[in-house]
Length: 279
Image (tube, rainbow, N blue to C red; front, side, top):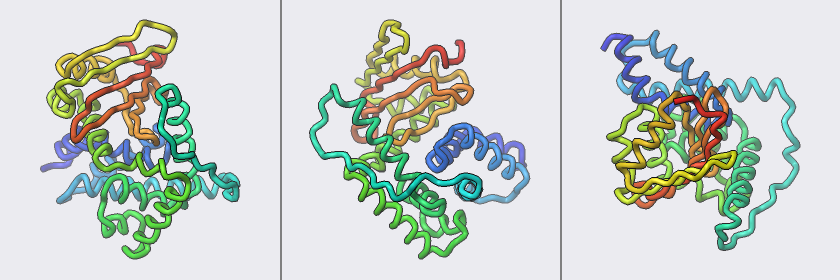
């Protein structure tokens, strides 16, 4: 395949994945989009790649690592001697859900800030995206054994922070979320419908007091999602397992997915109409 068709196919198939991957490491959607753009630019100058997705993953990992190292050199880091407050394990009252989600999100971001660039890349690539350590070694530029140690140290910091943080790295939820993000990003109604349970229902709550919108069944939910998210929104997985939708790098929607098995059974969206692109 020549360069142009290769890049075009890769952009369609892997851009959403790559932006999401970079976002997990950098925590900034604009920087993540820039990393993905640079990775595809380098792809356009390369030929004879056997596994495009793996190649892009390694390149994006290196770019993120360079970015984090550069940021560390430019800015003073926050005091890492402050102990994290561990969230107490208890049953979650629905009324407390938003507060607790915020607590988990804050704890996750704090732990990520405490990780070294190498630890963060190794942890995200292996524990979140299930990438083999021999491939991570290429991205980090260190031996396989060192990458295993980096991921182990990062995992230990997450476990020490709070037992509730383990929930957000659930592999099955991450896989379904990635499929959801890719389908929405590509406007692929068939793939989006396939990841939704037949009885799925969605509810959208709008900032500013507009009436809630409720849809039942995937034949209603899927087209409605694409109508809203198909206008250039960038979707990434948030630190607490939610999906964040950005328009012009401004947060426009937060979607909480309830997953059972390999299907989404419920979607709860909070929408800021002022940040959404016009239809």
